[in-house]
Length: 191
Image (cartoon, rainbow, N blue to C red):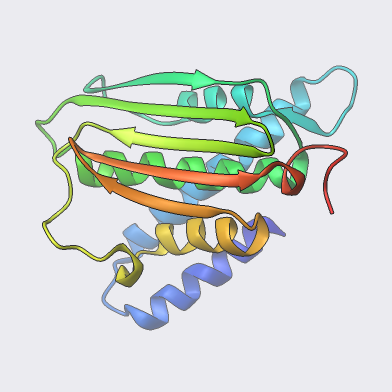
């Protein structure tokens, strides 16, 4: 169902941007399906048959699936946070989109740097940060007006499904800070 939803979203984007090449469309769908595959990969490794996933393991598997071409290093600061399968798929899509955006926009072909990923639980919130030390964004860009499919998916998941908040900080690259209520994420606390 998640894959079908992604394809439907991509069709909507094509309606808005008919000049988008078929290669770009297929590449976008492939990258997003890989993030869902990461969740299934983790589930298949669990010998006890549980359908819960540790966000720390999920992010590590996502990073394994992405080709950083040796120019970009990844640093982590991750808590053990266990979430159900359906939330793991959503978190995988969010993290995947943010990493791919860093690679596409922060690090042009001859630029190297690092991506920092943090996911920590503090009281009743989970903080997710994806930050880069890349080239930054053009001056004066309004993130709420961007018509980027990846950011649309991220915003939809954060705002609608997980009832969280997202903030963009432009300083020495770009930092995306996401705050998610624990009760929308963690096993035993979902409503």
